[in-house]
Length: 300
Image (cartoon, rainbow, N blue to C red; front, side, top):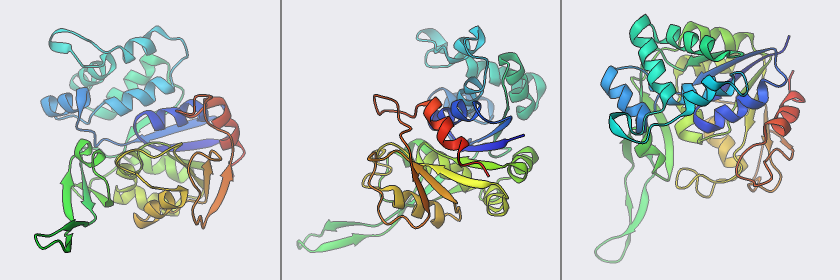
């Protein structure tokens, strides 16, 4: 039996899960709950629950293909008081209110969708993403270059719109993950990080102290799936090596990096790199079938 755990958030993690379900017998997704924008942010603020949007995307990625429920979960209302809300987000919020247990709500949503795997929030409570922004050089009144000191930015949406991110962390800093997340990492034959927003998705999970420690002790091979291009302004100018350096700076070490040849410059990569054609023909996303073949070769 091949057990695989994937970490991250948003469309990137959903893309990984669509691939992983093709070769793994046991799939777990550990999903960031730092989102504070859009439908997720509104439901989070209104009901004090973890933002459901990224969790919804992962449930759908692992659901029965062609299911009417999967299509319904992705439906987004375009009028009235529900405008902007995804139907699946509202279902998850309703299940959380009914059960009084957010993890149980996700399990029930997964049962409804026929999900092949588990979707687990990265922390048992909503968290706020905080970033330290590197100093920027500006011209002073006398025309001299002045170094402006580092600044803190809070909130996933605000962080995503920043460049020069030095480090991200969470508020509260000691947010705890569910026990199921730690158990899944400890039992995994392979741990997949990315693709997706480096700081606001992948490292929003890696910044959870207990998850970071679990990754360090994980027996399974840790694979980072690099993005197909820069995400502006979050990773403007980054090559593949810069992605690995950012992971390492946050205490997340990987064994191998999977990248699409020519998508990003390699840079001075000091871990094993595997170049495979894993992009869709349009180059705008990862092809699930190609990504599955490449990741299956990297198990163990």
